[in-house]
Amino acid sequence: MAFFHSVNHGIVKMLEARNYNDEKVG
Image (cartoon, rainbow, N blue to C red; front, top):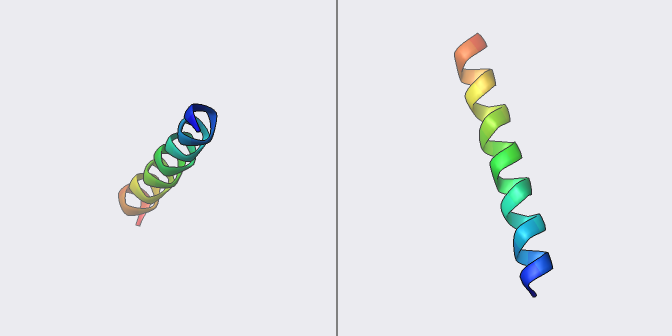
């Protein structure tokens, strides 16, 4: 479960970073 949580957290951070970049560029 800890591994899954770590991976899920990484995906969320990656999505947040992508959204932040899109907003900054747009």
